[in-house]
Image 1 (tube, rainbow, N blue to C red):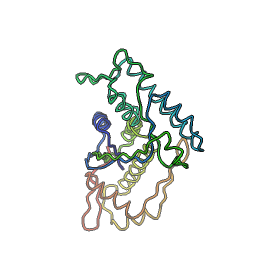
Image 2: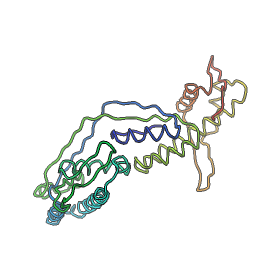
Image 3: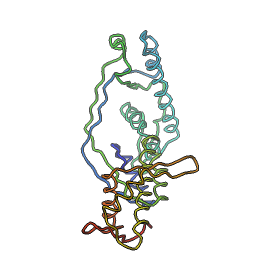
Image 4: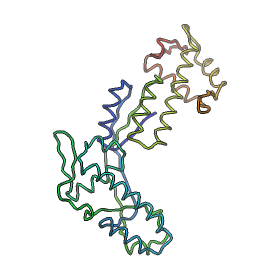
Amino acid sequence: MRLVTKSPSIKEALTGELRKEGIKFELTERSSYETFVGYTIEGTLDEIRAKIETMESAEREAIMEGFTSFKESIMHVLDHLKAGAQAEKLLAEGPWVVDILDQLYTSGVVDYNPEDGSLKLKEGVDTAAIPFQFKFPFDLVTNPEGVEKIAKQFVFTDLVQEWEFEIHELDIGKINALGRIASRYFPEDYVLKVYFALIGRAILAGEILKALGSGKADLNELRKAFLSSMPIQIPTEKGTLVINSSKEAFDAVIRFLEKQGYVDVKAGKVRKLRDIA
């Protein structure tokens, strides 16, 4: 159960927030990459729109829809920068902010104050004259020859570092806090999958510790008993939470509990050492 980011800013902000909440995690850094294959249209926002409007192919509507969203995102960021904004707070709105800020930096229209981490649009900048690159993926295109009259092929490969937050938390309250924090940095569907995986593991771990009580249990018998009762269905205020586990996943939870000091496993026997705080 992990969160993964390639953004140094998100890594720093998330690390600070998780530590502040006392959420247990392990941070791993490794080499990775970002690749985008598609097309780019360059110019001011008005120029880009005009170029898209000249398209006669079927994908014009989808490309225009993407451009409209791109323009709205730019205007949102510019509104913040006109008044001045904290870089960390702005980046926390989502990964899409990074590309827009990079383009504004390249155009030389933004001042950055390293002392307080603030960003501000330079005085006298005509926002209508700022050049941008609007990128869209190749799979939107059905008529490459038509698109290439106004757009350039664009392939971007960036060798970057990636940070993986392996979450070691079993406390439901702290998992809820993690969900709130992560929702500021990652897409909703991604956060929900990680959140419910953590909830499922926490509930299964709690049931295992409850079943162990103050004595020992044979690991094979314990595993057999739990797997025979799968899936576990838990009614909630909004519906039903269903938790399922394979033999391998159950054993992984046992190893996790052992590593975190909740159980001791010796000679095929499992003994509880402590409860989840």
